[in-house]
Image (cartoon, rainbow, N blue to C red; front, top):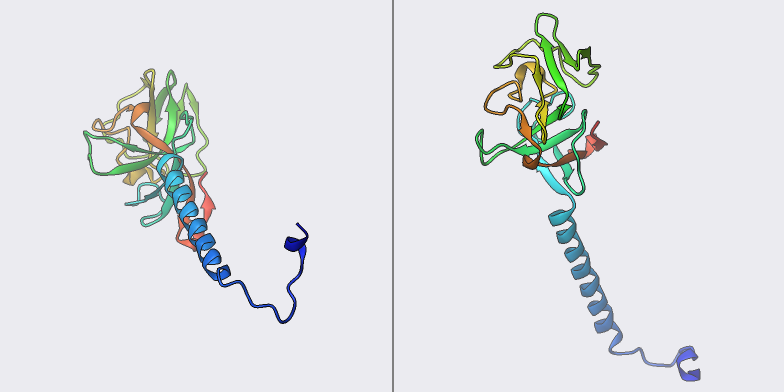
Length: 191
């Protein structure tokens, strides 16, 4: 042990294996980081691109966001990503949960107001009031295991008001959107 604690003297030659050990350590660290990143992005969070303008002003075309479905249970106000096979099997859609199972939703399209259980809801996140009816005829009660979703850009969004989307089964939800990570100038949490 005393030999290990000795300090090198000025005339002592450097260890020829030191540089190869350092290279091995760097490779090991990089591989470990790569494996952790792959596992993280496979099972915990997914980067997903926003396509279109249905979520303006919250999200914009080309934004990249982090989405996680780990232990997620939908609640009103959450921005979710889902796949609706009947609508477009190759495309993930991004919308906001407006109502959850058991809640009654209705809309006054003349005044642009959305009602949940007979009460108007505060929607500071929308681009404009809801005047576009699409296929919606209310009031409707959200069935068990489903949610009602709408885009924040209400009059330019295909959402649960359209019969092709309708009440969204919770099992189709990939997860909740948490952060915009690109472009870097708008790095922010999604609310």
